[in-house]
Length: 285
Image (cartoon, rainbow, N blue to C red; front, side, top):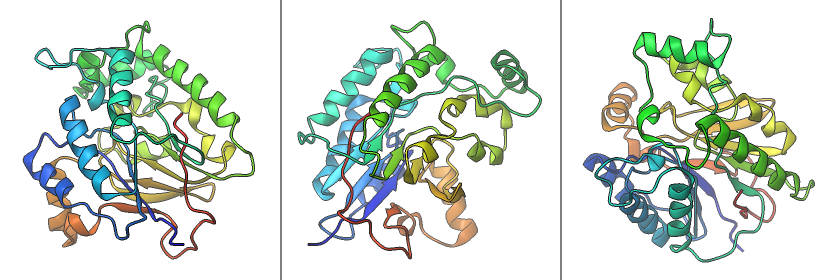
């Protein structure tokens, strides 16, 4: 039996024609391969469905988590849903692409952020937000990502963290996990941001120990548009972003490697390592 390889991409932003071309070129290495898509596929439901539908035709399994761009509600959006209703609609749309029930181990998370990942010098979320506005570094979420029916984005984040924690606690404690979230699970990745003020839109400190608590063999995230592999507590963290065309083209020029050679990013087995016994399975949290 051929064990699947688990790959990952993030931040595909398919409203850009050049990015759509990259997505059209994504293919598995074997017929058994799985693909994680860690958010920010697009801002319109039809674009998300197009990209995930195309990838689902090619990969044995596609595991998606929403990013902030999927949750934006623009005035001319043909799907005017906001907040949690928009999230639920996206989930149901994606389930329609793949009707199989989820089982175990690979855990797609949707956790949002709560302004607790602060830049140096900020002591509270209010101070962090004020510093960001002074610097002119303000995430578009402040205008387009609505928390309905929750009173605020931090409140929605707290509800998601609590619900997800309960589901992860119920997993077989003997099994390792692959934790997948659009936003970073720990503050460490934000330390390389050019504009540190942006870190308050980059996750929550409430999940900073989840890679240890939930036995992560790997953590996959995006959002930062800084693709790289790092390690925390011996756990491999994979930032799998494509990013905007100007960003990935600059990386191509700098490193002399085409983006097609870098995506998708291999998650399991870790490059140079041995495949996990039994291969991956998934549970939506």
